[in-house]
Amino acid sequence: MARMKFLCDADRCIECNACVTACKNEHEVPWGMNRRRVVTINDGKPGERSVSMACMHCTDAPCQAVCPVNCFYTTADGVVLHSKDLCIGCGYCFYACPFGAPQYPRVGNFGSRGKMDKCTYCAGGPEADNSKEEYEKYGANRLAEGKLPLCAEMCSTKSLLAGDGEIIAQIYKERVMRRGYGSGAWGWKTAYRETVTS
Amino acid sequence: MTMLLTGIRIFVMAFALLAVAAAPYPANAQQPNQINPTAQSVKEDQLLNQFGTIRGRGSIPDTRSYTIEQPAGRDWRHFHEVTLRWIGAIAIVGILAVLVIFYLWRGMVRIESGRSGRKIVRFTAFERLVHWMTATCFIALGLSGLNVTFGKPLLLPLIGPGAFSAWSEFAKYVHYYLSFPFTLGVVLIFLMWIAGNIPNAADVDWLKRGGGMVGHDHPPAARFNAGQKAIYWIVVLGGGAVAVSGYLLMFPFYGTDVYAMQVAEVVHAIVAVLFVAAMLAHIYIGTIGMEGAFEAMGSGTVDVNWAREHHSLWVEEKMGPTGATEPPRQPIARPAE
Image (cartoon, rainbow over all chains, first blue to last red):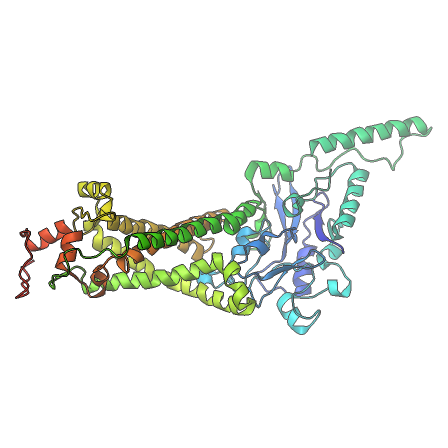
């Protein structure tokens, strides 16, 4: 079975936000919530770099570990998903997440955050694949249709890669070899306890 | 990182040399370009080592999303899933074990001189109302709070995910809303009983004599003995700490970032489990641990002999010094206060 991962080649990200837009549109993510976002470090200064970040679908995911009601599950593809029926909106996954991935419909005073929403790796939720219920709660299930996450598919510079971790790591390594430089796979050490560049 | 770059550089240079030696024609356009356009750009490891988190600027209103990496979440996870469970289990199971052993060994502390039949007012109706309001809220807050830490391993396998989620969501709202009367109660307790709870020399003597818990000793005490003063300060300081940290959690990200939220949760959880353990001891001594103690908070009056044995200085202050003999039972004379 493939182990699905994201890899952002930060040397190629041009902060076009196509991934963000693709995600929001594909899943009809409500206003105010973003499953994926692009952040620019040292914006406008020498050394500027942009990184596209969403849920990294961690190995031994912290959100899954801290959830007090066990609403998370990891699929056979290594995708970390959750059940909005079980989520109680406590906010713990946000505190534990190294990537700030969990999103809530509201700010959350008096525990009124609502059900958590996050990147599903375009793999839906516990409901039947591509059912109406699944779409309303989690968005499209492209994985069930044999397609990869739309953010990576839409990336204008192919900075964002999605797919089997070994294959995208190989693609990235070949790129680094060919062009002679690479800043590494951002977040991989934190998410998967491994790096690609070694 | 630098090792890698050096490695690549050496490889590329060696390759270039080979290419130059082998090819009779000038530099190949397909040669790897040795110029790294992002050589000066920030590196992930360098940022994490320097700041612990990686933050930048985004283009959406949610400023929290500008933090793209905060591995500290891993430490918090370890605290919440491992450390806290151990602290909580040791504190709560430990205190229960101590209480059971103590009860089996000591039994209920009796009123040694028997009941006199005369009553003395210990807590007014207002004091009791505040006490029970705080106590009721505390029990509800304690159970709903423990559910967050211990519900998943203990209750979830018993009742199943659907019922457990429904209960946990209900418990979450109970926890939030009962915090308000609880906090009010803590503030009132602080104001109401501060006068009797300043530690003094009598407490040193009381503690030296073990509070009379062992044997049949009755060290003198005023309205509150050193043990009760300890409970008072645990309620005031512990209650204050859980209230402040709890409200930081209830109003997330008002002047706090994700790291501060983690710290608030750690403080809240540790103080809370120790608080629960301390209150179990308080409940024990106020009920089955001591004859005549519960009525102080029940009816508000205590037997004079109970008061003499446990709060001799307070009785003297209230009733004036009396002889060693039993005061007359009839009529029930209550000296002017």
